Length: 365
Ligand code: CP3
Image (cartoon, rainbow, N blue to C red; front, side, top):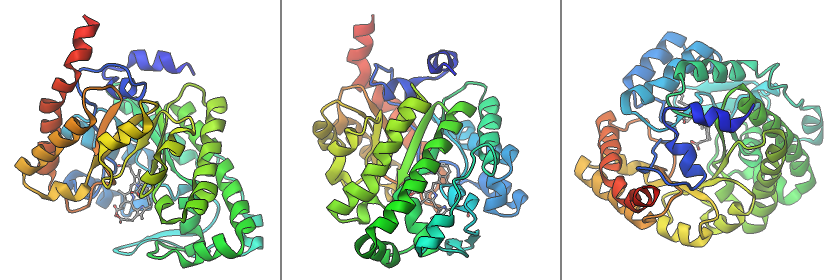
């Protein structure tokens, strides 16, 4: 696949241009978890599917929910509707989503034997339904906006696989990190390989950009973060530069803004920034080396439309008049978010951001 050919066919390539830090007419915008329970049309499709996992495993319905926020809000990028836990599910851990409890695994991974027995899933085998979803969505989008493919980081996947569920303190995973680091490393090595070939397959199926979600990187100590979270992600980025050349990769390591420069040095096109750091400071720290995505507090979307506009304006101003900003939240949109407040945010970014790109537009003339 020739990615540059793909780009030129897109009707709206603002997002991909911003990833390359090229001039744009206004700041591109999409939201993490933009398809989800805050939208009534999502809840209707999910009810039709019966449950979340069936929805994830039905490509036509994945396509339907991926397109819903694009149709409603005109976001500048679509994100594959799926979940990061598809890989552990394909490894045979017995994934279930229990209502109001989140994900659980009936076969958590604790011993050397458990880890040795884990298969590396074939993206066009056990995970073919995800690739079929990418192909179906790509065709359903008719090149309106680019499609983002994604996976969880090895460390974040490992936390769910070791704990067997979501966790507050990650006691089992961290015990392994301290008492049996070689065991954790063996698990992370398998996940690194699985994630790399999974993301490359999504690119081959049509994804225009790839994102790695490291939701739990920030719970590690500094040595632990560098060795168990960042290093496996850096290996994936390096591998993708060979097996999916030219496809931009984004990294979002929540709670880990202390390591922003090290994240930038992995060779990614963009970094996600959570809401605990001023995006102007983040820009200063990476010194133009990568694009930045973020970073409004998702809870701010419960505030009034006026406040939302003010906060959006502040983030645009903090980033300033430079290319390479993709507007997003600092984490996923929350299920109870009023849909009309999302509309207020979209309107604010559409109206306020062109001023920060005027110089670029002048230069292009
Ligand atoms: O961004 C998008 O719109 C694409 C879809 C997407 C989902 N999950 C759908 C989903 C993406 C990118 C994810 C990633 C994901 N999944 C992450 C990393 C990003 C993050 O938010 O930190 C994590 C940690 C998961 C694991 C996961 N999936 C959890 C912990 C939960 C339960 C939490 C909850 O909100 O109920 C899920 C379920 C899930 N994934 C839902 C959706 C729309 C809700 C399912 C439903 O009840 O309909």
